[in-house]
Image (cartoon, rainbow, N blue to C red):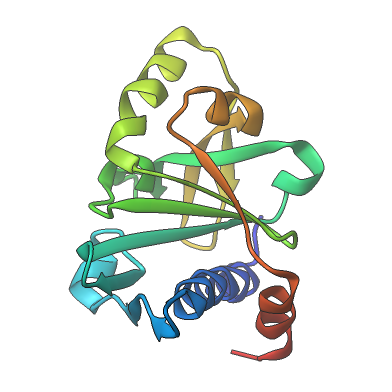
Length: 178
């Protein structure tokens, strides 16, 4: 069983890392982006951050932090949540309205990112084909079903990109307690 408080803290570090990445992007010495936490109603729909720029307007970002991907070379894509009372919901891979999904391969400097809506057909195919294992992750009041996909197969879709952030951003995230 995952320790929800511990996983929440690690997840917050992932959000902090993505926020710092955007905050450090400059054009002619000026910040290119303004990053804010998504409002509570936006968070319920699957966005963690709101990114604003003159070029792109407003974009929403969801950030996931995967603590096992470094060792397994796989990511866990949440496809369903089942509450203790039996209620079922679609998982974040299907419900997020965010424009971009970021996956931090914790504790490395590697981030994967993609547009969630574009990945849905691939995820559905993978489920229908039984291509990858689906595992259940126990939490305090629910469990989630996660499709375990090799990182190389995500990247092979052409939709998933890799971003390597600077190590000083990692150090800053680790140095700042939440």
